[in-house]
Image (cartoon, rainbow, N blue to C red):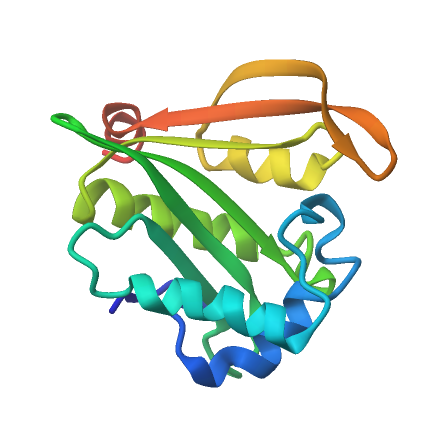
Amino acid sequence: MFRSQTTRTIIRDHTIDDLPTHHTLFSDKTTMFYLQDIATSTLEESENNLRKAIDEIGNLNRTLYFFRIEDRQTKEHIGEIGYTVNAFTPLGKIVSLGYFIRPEFWGKGYTTEALREVMRYAFCDNDVFRISCGCIKDNIGSERVMIKCGMIKEADFGSVVWHDGEMKDRVEYRLLRDEWRNKNL
């Protein structure tokens, strides 16, 4: 099981005991505004989502690395971060990464702190070669996190995502293991 600490957070694999706060997070319309496709509305949907993450733990060919972010002192559920393995290559895994946190933690650096630690884990301990991450262009806070963590912008896609009743633009960022190492020497 994955468990790591930063200055203010604990980032860890899920347990079934997380279900109440997991459901509160995934069913919150403000938190999930930009991720409506993975939002849940019932406890059963949230439980299925959580069990999917739990079932991957310990799998030798694990493709889902979905982690809970908690406040290190209070153990309060801050949000979620993780990645999906899209390909296994001789150079390492190619993954797509994402994150979201509760609104009361927005703009306070928690996501940046958690993302830096997940990148460290991915590149140093989990044989990840390439991380991709993106967001709807309107989600300025999410894009700012990618920039703060040293990710490199690869694309601006115009009118590519149907969201909240209209077509929206999307930005995509990446970071390769060697790029990360060069920035973190």
